[in-house]
Image 1: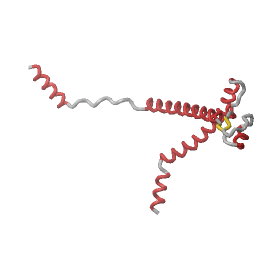
Image 2: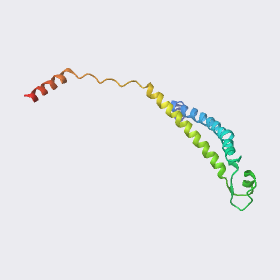
Image 3: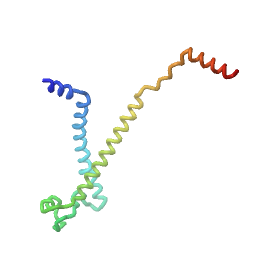
Image 4: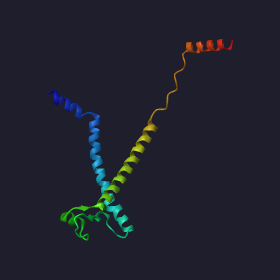
Length: 140
């Protein structure tokens, strides 16, 4: 029964629950960014570069024809799907930039929320008196 109790204590700790929520939200957010890249950004980039779909760019590695769609080429043999890699890399860069901006805003909010630095405690009277005596002795 001790191990179950330990697991229960571990599972209800704030950090574990926060981590679980972050993973779930991060997964959903990743899908949103993936859709944004795949459905909005890459078609615009393709249109700018002549109406091409980057995700279908590949280099066949077994000598097959290059006119096939990517899925058929992959079924026919090994291919180097660099267009798909470009799409996923762009997805990652956008996601990393958005997360960076979120962390930056959170840090800025924490700094604004942090209490002002406290004034140093006043020097005790006996220390002040000893300093005055020392200074008086130095001047003689």
